[in-house]
Length: 496
Image: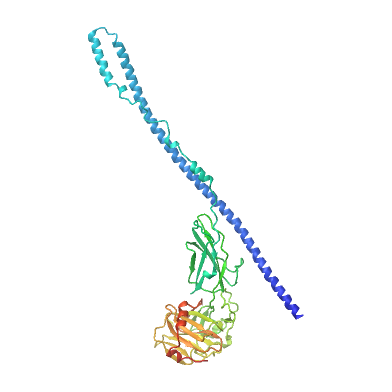
């Protein structure tokens, strides 16, 4: 009976997975169908615009050529009219002289004949008819009329659609995820010298494998990338994975998207646990502030976190960190007395993790560290063998120290504005860094026998928490190069 139930459960699970896969494929087909309709409409619109632009150019060329022909016509007509007028006048004068000469032949008186002959000779010498060029100053051929469009006609007749670029290929092995930056690299399946730019699309997700159409996030787009790689920087890794796809574009059209790839974005995410905080602390997600007027009147206002309702999750390994609505204590068991403490809402059981904390400029006193969940509600960070921290005091006599098991060691450097915390549970190491310069401030080494909880103390001021961060490469390098603890660190270590 039990074996049959198990077999049936496996069948049901397999069928459910297959149904989910088919449904996702149906969504993909519907999405693609809409894309075909949208893109075809856009292509037709773009083609109309291109032909309208071509018609406009031809109309402009026709008008320009027409004007040139008319100008040449007017110029040649004027030249020929002037020449025709000159010839007409010369011909009339010549015919008059010819008639006068003909009449002179009939003169009988020698003296009158000689006088007439001299006059005719003088007039012939000065006659305009003998000074005229009998060659037309302009031909009837219109030089601008001889337009040869044969080459252009062949080009237009050979017009074809610009080939759609093929989909690029992204190789996950060529991509890099480090320091909360992701470098995505791709290549074309074959050389294409008509590629103008690339479009990169990405989104965060909590699902491994291929992207889902009905995912919880829309695709973000980065356009006009000229190279075959791009680096996204300054990310907050508040999801388990990120999907990436890229498409190539020429001057006219964008090609199909590449096969999407999914890259793991592993980082620790947590916030302050308001149910554990001292009543004089006001907690809002990633900010905690001292409130001297708060007290038991706030007790009913602070509620345990149920479902954080955000896409960020702990590390993908469920055994690494654990988040619970009420992590350690309920409203009846808050930190109290002078233990102005608040815990993170996530238990760290294994792995290497990193987070950062920024203090307000006027904060009088604060501590940053980790503790076991057995930390008492009256306990102060660093004063028990179950807590490790660095403490900053700006009240009366300024100090900066590492504390553990009620022992303190002064740190010979100013406290930075932003402090990075590196926690290696398996390696038994807790280190603090200047988050800006990655300068090592202090390192504790201990054999952690229980899960750890990020812990914070603040008095007269406030702290801002930054999570979703990978362990920085610089920190990894420093950790590898460390050959042991300094004397000041060793003096505070306690294999609790």
